[in-house]
Length: 333
Image 1 (tube, one colour):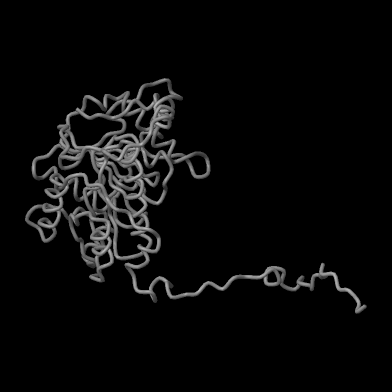
Image 2 (cartoon, helix red, strand yellow):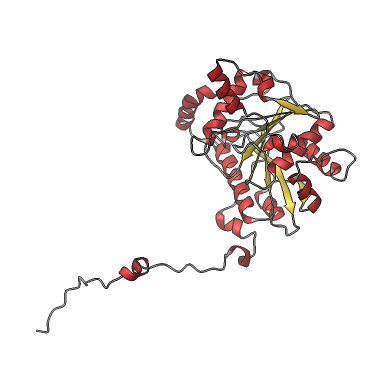
């Protein structure tokens, strides 16, 4: 049985938490709940959805009961699993059912393929609401649907890592998940996002939280080594390395599952599935901005550039004019 929070009590819990002194003494160990709830974070476009669709599919093939929940407003998590077919989101369906005076049923929002159960939380229309609030609302609806009573070995939550608001940080801030998996590659922006997530984990551990980082999946690996160096620096394991391969790129673009036992990519994702299940939640050591830049050559990130301060005259441009001096000049006596 999962252990999701009662979201309606958030306000009082936040107030109580703010009144407490943070403690650094947080117990660490292997998750003891039957269901492992795992939150996956990464930069938009880094390949989280591709990784998760294939990971969840392989988990099901090796006999695990898996629920995949897309928590990204783009709602692209399940599209790859379902061959490009977009499934109705929980938020969208809830709004339509409410207008019709009907209740949302499991079959309205949860669909399955190859043993994987999957759904999308969704988000507000562009410019018309907060994506983080949409996440919270989505989990409130899941509670009403019986989330606490569902029987799964793994619940995988696909979160957008670029956004650091409270809604997207929900699994970390409220111990909804036992552990976090990061998806990154050998570029500064993706590692910046993964480092931010490590910082969030460390912050909430200081407040008494228990979520840890299980490790890093390096996607689109070109062999340059920055992501590996990052994992070593923040002291987290590498769970799998997925190469920058044209076959993978093409199949991902065509919404094809590659994590099929007995095929070329099957062993890679089977190894990832076992690693994800066995990895312990670790307390990471997030890097400073300079520490992150040090993973790259100065030429790649502009670290050898010297800042040239602007002047008031620079800012005024053609409107620049000498200012009258306030200095008092005395005539010779």
